[in-house]
Length: 439
Image 1 (cartoon, one colour):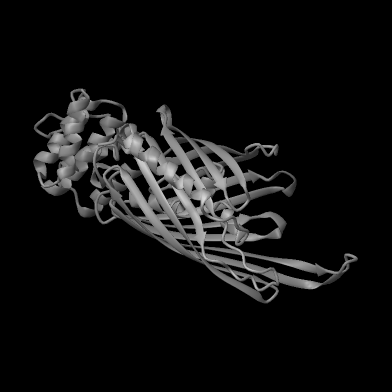
Image 2: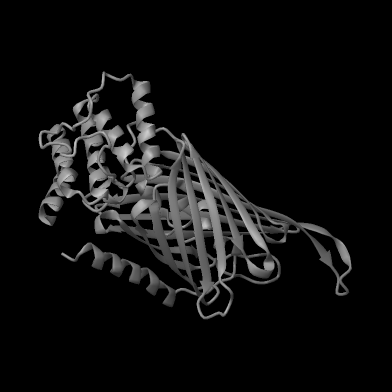
């Protein structure tokens, strides 16, 4: 059997090869505009990211990594006085994911005669709305999306349809993530403005993200704008830090047309998360066209079960989970969980459902903020008070914590304890075999 790395390389190459057979296009240019403040601050290098509704705009496969429901709203003050609004919602259960999104743009402009005299004003409107579905098989996520397009200028309207296909893969124990997407595969549109028929702006993306120590993440993405006959590269760096119980993130990005001689487009942004809400801001430089500023507010609904890190063992075989894993409990003994399944943490009294929900939310927040020791401690404590099936899921999350820091011995002990409580979870056997073989 081919290695996951080779498989992923073949999948990415196949997507890029599509550009040789599909025609260029000019329609619906706003499909090329980044959406969402976090991704915009990272120069739109987002085809490999997963676990949030924002991924819908870049790669439909990303929602297969979600473990709850998230709703997000973005506003951008764009060039030419254009206002951009973007609404997204996604749900996932770590194996399947569904999402919906809509982009709305509006502006007012002046009609002028050949001498430059104003003849009156007219409005411009653009609506793009889509639905997406995604799934996971082992280390691979895949997704597809369909979107309806509508453009209106001065009372005239053009309609169209486009689709997206996406793939994502987890390598190096999940610390390296690859993504590829073919976007805007669309039917011809009839603008109705006397310009004839055009097609949607076909675009290809292929990128990678690597989790680095101390809360850093590096992202890079190569793009082929078939519609424009141009290539582009984008890169980003994200640093996450918890401050006084709040999740903070600092982001920088860069994008440039390869060989075009244009100056690099710089991006930057910050994020702040409290409880289930996150507020992100992004600044993007467009040179002579001026700056673009975006703001996104997202709300993650509590999941029906205790939150497990995105990409967890619940989602598939080894390789999906470690990128979201965490070090062992700060309060646990250095020996970690024993093979019998008990972790060296203080015994807790039986918690109420509300208390467990609060602790589970804190575990998620700690993980998102890079506080892996705190995250693992909370998951391990929660595993002491649930039934066997629930405890198994929580122990496997604690195992991911150890694996994140490369402590495979403790990760293996936690996975064995989780399997002992719920032998029906075959994915844990795959994790156990993988860790045993890696020693």
